[in-house]
Image 1 (tube, helix red, strand yellow):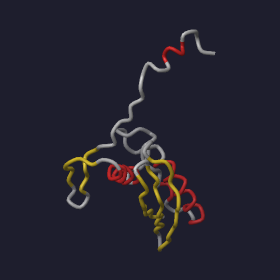
Image 2 (image 1 turned 180 degrees about the horizontal axis):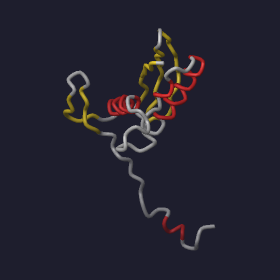
Image 3 (image 1 turned 90 degrees about the vertical axis):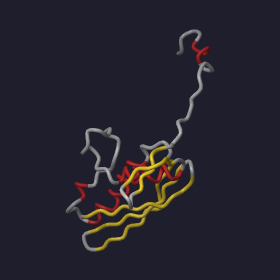
Length: 133
């Protein structure tokens, strides 16, 4: 039920994809220097998303980051599937990330380490996140 003449607007514009270029973070030297693009930019984005607690910082939208604080004290049987769901949900907010899968969990003392594969438009990458429980 489009109004008359609506088909005129279909070819009126182009959707342009933004570049993924960003500032390069050197985590060893705690410096931001230069630029990064493509898969390296997505790797940085994944690092930032997984190290930002969701809802804790007003500067970020409520869709940014991952919720991990409330997993403290919960049983392993709850933490592992919930960690998989939360990491996947957080990373899929980035339109350069197509899928997150291949989760493997390693439990050691009070720590759960999740290793997984992130499938991006630039290729695949391995990532991991440790959580104290």
